[in-house]
Length: 160
Image (cartoon, rainbow, N blue to C red):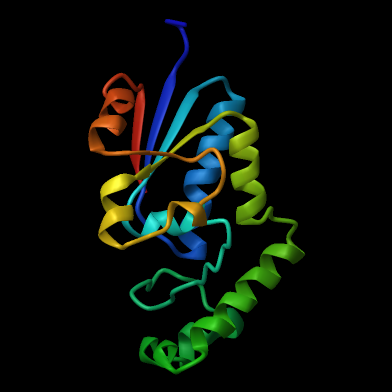
């Protein structure tokens, strides 16, 4: 359909906080009638594994709001303490649940139901010796050329 708008997204990050933007934007675009594709490459491939083990990474993320005013008294180096990433991930998941935010798995399922095309970067899968069986059903595998076939005609292209 010539009138249909297209959204292309490149997902490169594999942490809990970076899992939300591609799935929220893709599911919203699909609901608005956009033909939508997400190309998962490098660490973004973590988002399409069957077993999601995503964590928040406060390191290198100075914009992350810290609970209990920790940003005032807890230096960034403190986030490198062993176990801190798991604690912060648990706190983030608890806060999201309390606020009624959908899980990453739920958003991913929503994208699949909305027929968002999801493509895993074959080169990255090969580079990291990943097993294709570890990924969700319906995931396609392709290279940069596969992405450009779609992105080259997209109305919007986002790098996340």
